[in-house]
Length: 89
Image (cartoon, rainbow, N blue to C red; front, side, top):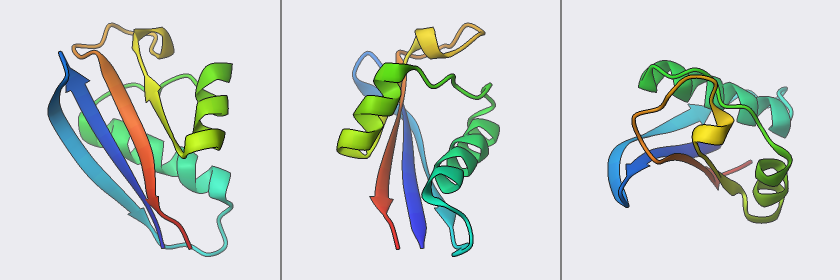
């Protein structure tokens, strides 16, 4: 099972969060991450964030990263979206 925690923060306060659970052993880890981000974007009614090199490096190192205004095409009403892998098979 793969679980990712998505949190939206504004002024260091948690506004919204959700946990996306995926249970498909045939999917690669990368596919699971992208699917979880896509699912959370639908739940939060956001466009999908753009992965920058800093996000990729941070995610590989710590299993979590933050998406700020630089990662979105449209204006966002929060400071950042944080994703964090909390369980992997």
